[in-house]
Picture 1 (cartoon, each protein chain N blue to C red):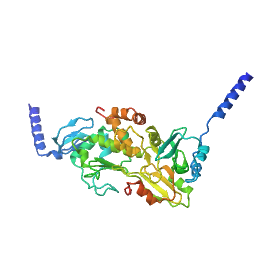
Picture 2 (tube, helix red, strand yellow):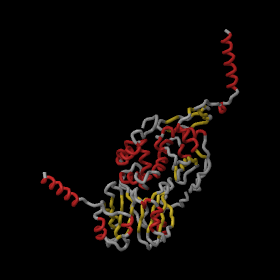
Picture 3 (cartoon, rainbow over the protein chains, first blue to last red):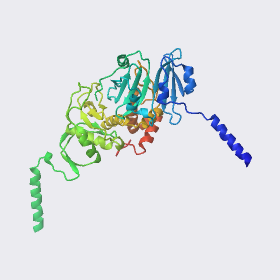
Picture 4 (cartoon, rainbow over the protein chains, first blue to last red):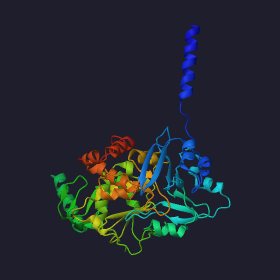
Length: 175
Length: 254
């Protein structure tokens, strides 16, 4: 009986040892990653391997998913030197940062400018983006659901005007 | 003998009264509403059956849940804050009102949303021959929606699905996108927010966004389920699970 108990304890110990822990995908953690500085090995060390790797114009794109829901959690693009070029972070439904006010509260000094979402020939977009040029940050917000869809960090040297110009076609979304 | 003479007199009086009543003044009993006489063009019914052109006489029609829900939402005038100012307004005709109520009666109630503030009638889309548009809880139908070769119910299902998508919860939205393989993948300079999956679209314009893809998929689930099952089985399964087994056209074949 005593031996059996020891075996059980041993097996439980082994399963705990080998159990993978969920990487920390919290807004606070991801925010610490720096576009133009953080490197691929640093990301691997912090977050482990991604669920998917794709390539676009010679750039490597890593996508992480939430282990419980399989929802997209984080997508990062590396430049040709494997330095972080952009981050897309998606909140889970229970996280504070699904609310626009909570995100803005993280950056009390920030100056978010609102730009319209992408146009569709027959469906007026209910998405708007809040761009913070200095932080190189875009918050993509769904008005009808009152929910943040994604937060994007990218090269801060480009202006929001450039973003609108490059990301068209847009229409003035005054709805 | 006396009673039969009374009956004849009563019939004579009734005929005299009816003869002096023009059809459009027909009074309908409780639980019914009046449809005024109108010429009706040929059209495709929600179940795909072609209906011939005719002159519809004034008649009473039984009030339906669809009539009670949708009639107050059929709005004349220009939709508030509509951004496409080049699109001119056009008033609803009796024919169109009758057609739209008939079409909405066939559409599953899962797509009837209180979030819809109004269905408006404009003349021609800036993207002609586009039959309908939507935004901010508004639906707009253009002349082309009433073309004889179009199925109005199908157009409405598509537009209503756009509004349903925008209202999907913060759990259901990501769940649909995960099931149908849409990832958010953008950075400055990119032309899209969502990276379209490589293949498996019932309509090419589904690549525009997960919302457009959703509207197409719901439309096909209801009107051409076999094609959706073949092209995008993941969407077919998700829609079936989300809306349930009763999510189909009412009173007609699929």
